[in-house]
Amino acid sequence: MTTTTPPATAVPAGSGPWRLARAELLRRPSVKISLAVVVLFLLMAAGAPLLSSLAGWSPDEFDKSAVDPYLGGQPLGPLGGISADHWLGVEPVTGRDLFARVVHGAQVSLLIALTATAIVVIAGTAAGIAAGYFGGRTDAVLSRLMDLTMSFPSLIFMIAMMSVAKDVNRVLLMTAVIGLFGWPGVARVVRGQTLSLKHREYVDAARVGGSGPWRILTRDILPGVSGPVIAYTTLIIPGMIATEAALSYLGVGVRPPTPSWGQMIAESVAFYDTDPMYFVIPSTCLFLTVLAFTLLGDALRDVLDPRSGRA
Image 1 (cartoon, rainbow, N blue to C red):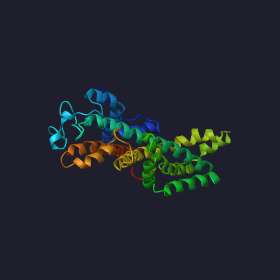
Image 2 (spheres, rainbow, N blue to C red):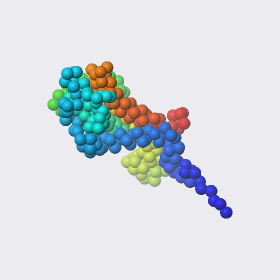
Image 3 (cartoon, rainbow, N blue to C red):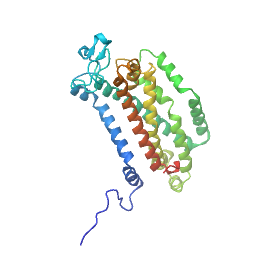
Image 4 (cartoon, rainbow, N blue to C red):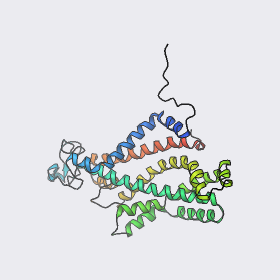
């Protein structure tokens, strides 16, 4: 007698919604590829010091022997000086190792983007739940604050703030400024979800059973809005990464010699015709990271927020 083994993607009957969502996500090749790219860059950012030490160069170490002083500091060798000593080539003029600067740039860029996203999600979720659940004056005040924040020309204000602030921690300041303008979008999504949940039967039953607002918000409302919040979070991370890169590209972000992808792209503009690899490598890293997070966010929205109409 032979028995058949269920396929690896089969989900047992009675599985919870999160297990069903995970099975649906892992069924999609685009999710697997995007997740692999995201994990790769996160590991690269987390292990930046170890990776640069394995390569034998620090991000600020000059190697004048890798550039030609008689050709304006152009890298020696093909493809921007790629060799056994410099895995991704070197930076023109200075000879700094491009691999070390790329991995340390990933650390700075992703640290700012992910921390700013955490600030946005926490602040937006708290404000949205409070506005939707309590209503009345609380909703009016928080909604007007959302409108006021969203009415600011955020990019211009960020440039002004970063230009005026001189002797401060640039990474900390960029994180705070980027996070300041992102929370209203999350708050509006959460507010709408909360308005639809607060009169559900199980919420009314908890209220009648003597549960206080804090218990209802954390035990009943928050789990109900977590799906859309997770999907929205993965969709705003690419925007945060791009914002950090744009500010660094404009010269008001992270200051040299601290590397970031946007700063490297800005510096490579002067060499794109003579050393295109200096432009291609950080641009490719930025493109792949943003694309991976975007595809992952789209898939999560399809699965966790069916009302988006894209499932």
